[in-house]
Length: 261
Image 1 (cartoon, helix red, strand yellow):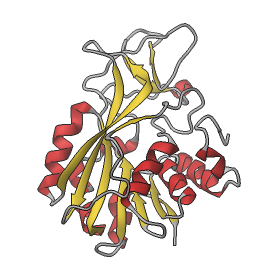
Image 2 (tube, helix red, strand yellow; image 1 turned 45 degrees about the vertical axis):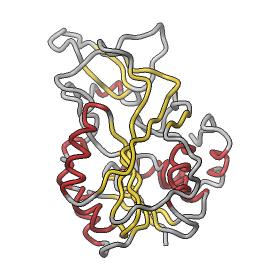
Image 3 (cartoon, helix red, strand yellow; image 1 turned 90 degrees about the horizontal axis):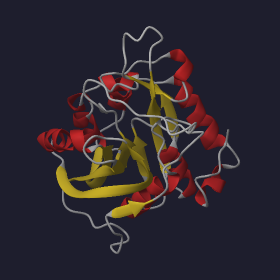
Image 4 (cartoon, helix red, strand yellow; image 1 turned 90 degrees about the vertical axis):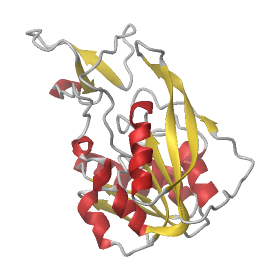
């Protein structure tokens, strides 16, 4: 029975019994930068996160969410959300506990935090399975090469399990969602759907402990999997709930340009 939960993953996940889920698939929280960074405007076009200068010029490098630019949300330490305060150690042991044996776990991560995440995951019992790459149609400015991809750490619990389509390559090319995002780090439904279909069967239970605007859950609904999403921010929880319940949710199958809001 699918469900969405509003609250702190660290507490809610304790309510599930051991080996309850067939798959964990999530864009987990992590620090996006150390000490802040800058992104320049390109004309009037802004996407993702952008640069803002204080009126009094006290803080010259401020990272803020595009959608909440009027609230001056400062994340100079790379913290976009309250969830960024969570360390890997606070949720990885529980993810391992509630995942069934011989099952997969997909965690989205950036290059800066990849090594730490893999080490912490292996410390609690996960085994490294593969490193997947999502190639986007956008790039984040960086003084050492533009970042035009994200990484997905594929882990397993127990014995190795083959994916359903063994001809799938480990590089996925899907357009990043630009413009009117439902969530600052929203992922394409198509990407989540590929992962879910390859590691589960219809009727299986899929957990997204940091669901954001619900892309993972939408993909589950489209593919007849049970979805279990947890989100601490009520704003995004409400968006995910409306998105899941929308009669237009199936339209996401054909294009990530279809917006519900």
